[in-house]
Amino acid sequence: MDVRGKTIIADYLVLVSGTTDRHVKSISEGIIYDIKEMGILPSRKDGASEQGWIVLDYADTIIHVFHAEERQHYNLEQLYEGAALISPTKSIIDLTLKNDVSYNNDVFQGLHVNIHESDDKE
Image 1 (cartoon, rainbow, N blue to C red):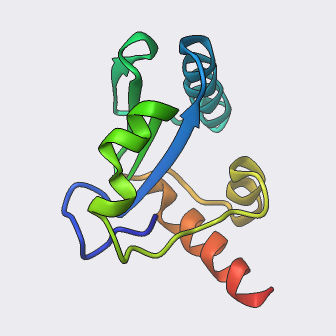
Image 2: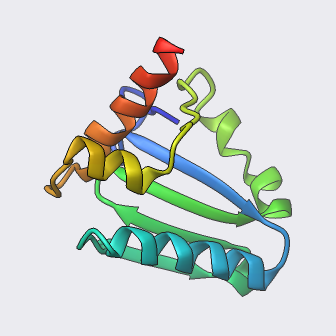
């Protein structure tokens, strides 16, 4: 979700759901692993799969990995109603490498804009 202008905590929110504790943990570990391959680590990780919600803070992009029930309960989509939804058609890693997005405090800004632009062209 493109939340620029709707909050000061981030420019983008990524919302992901898992069905079990193990699934939520695997998703978050997979995200960390894939992005770490580019030399990028989250500035902060909070929560645990047993709590139903893991948050990965990558500066201007925050990734929320929920149990499906918690995602429905907290309903961040409604909280940020009107935010542009961004549906990547390619893997985040491929787009980042292709566009040579370098890590500074807003590593994903160019990545998400490029995803959004590619959706507009289709």
